[in-house]
Image (cartoon, rainbow, N blue to C red; front, side):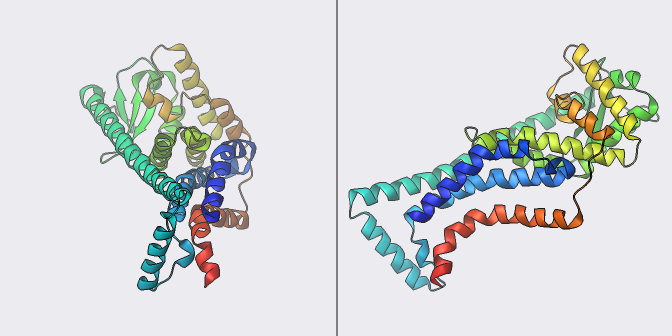
Length: 315
């Protein structure tokens, strides 16, 4: 009962105040990819903590042991004692429902996100097949569209897509910087992190940290792609391309499609990205980065450690 209450309290604190904590701290902007992983670790620890809380309410975690006979006996004794009183029945049922609800929500969200991604992938592949073309000197699929659009499509056949409007708008170096930004998304496999963020948001939309995870993670991944692109192109060129595409996107009707928003070149965080490119922050020192990775790992396993703490102390 005590362990379950602690796990529920942990989930409430992290889920409610986690998003505000991420926005107030500055270190994720110094290491954006690590910051995105930290946000995901915190967000996913919430349903894990709630599911384990339900299990600890239903099972005697203090009796966990490698002795299978002893474990089964302890479980049977716990069930007999719980169902012997109305209060015990209520606690046991609540624990079972809580665990089942978490597993069910995650399974439902997985199916929903997978279906949406499959439909979006098919839409983009059809669009590219019908309207896409190759142009000499452009390492991307070109769509005949007046708006300034650039995005990447992950999947079995990853591709970078750019509109003819963006090619007409940007100079050669600016276009190369934009394509490098989109290729950075693909090479760094940012889509996997974005899928994990979308999954937790779909599973727990009422939890602030889970609900805001896609926006928080997306902003950090855009900064990471900017950083990778700036390693091969002049940051000022990438800034001018970002400003030009953002301004054109605000002026051209219909340019803010799902793909354009996902690419970040017509997003609302352009000002923060421009500031970061013009005045790059000092990266995390190696020791701080290592400690942060350990902290992310600790946050990931924290609910599990809390759940088995009584058994560890009993040993």
